[in-house]
Length: 313
Image 1 (cartoon, helix red, strand yellow):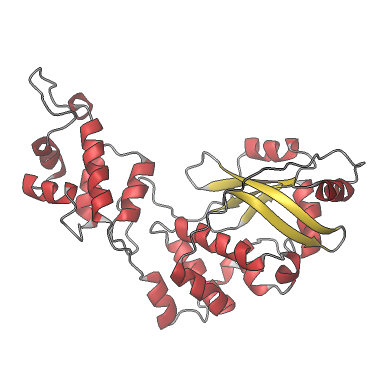
Image 2: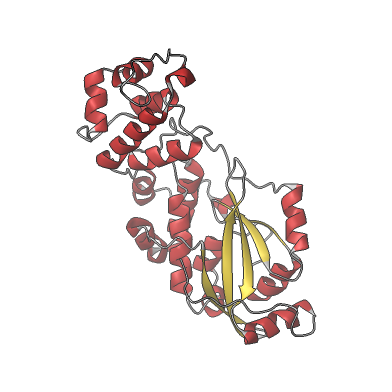
């Protein structure tokens, strides 16, 4: 599990390369982001006089350059995408001067060349969230027999309801007190039996983990562990960075008690400083609906199937 990281066999040159991977700056997109935010900031927002003779929306380049402590010429190069490797410190100063939101800071960070740096993060993660708010627990309970689970950005399972327990415990997913979904998928032989589309599910989870890396050493520590225990099945995906997001779609399950299942899933981001996601599973057809009712000890018809013409992944 995630707690097995310290001193593990994955601390070698290969894992060091994983931890030290950098992302080259998409300079054109970063430049467009900086310019659009400069033009959106009102001078009064940063303590500057508005004046009636302004011809430029938002801040002038000279004003932003002064606030960020850089030259106007360098700011022009950044906005035009002509600086291929802007420093994290400069981008952090611009983010501060522009009053960027957390989402904008994270987007700018993803566009920049970053290796373990967290200067752009408004709230750098110190450790993975393991506490779920009481109101979220209440939501899980209110969902009743509908399977639902809360995960963090490391794919740790934090809380779930009785419907999810009945669905996944027979698969072996909840055998450990601190379950990590990726660790289960890669190391437990029962996972391949449980998920007929195992490869796609692993792609989704690796893409999810990569998408929430953002300079967090906890993600790289987990990647180190998965490198050691998952071998090429993990490392090849980690290098290639699958593009599947897995926010919504259909998963197939082979359940030892009720047979084949097709489940729609919806992943909803919770409004926490420490990232958490609520995932809800609904039957995708009548047979799956009947099977979930059976697992919940209900008469058929309690959970109605939800079908859709298209699926976004």
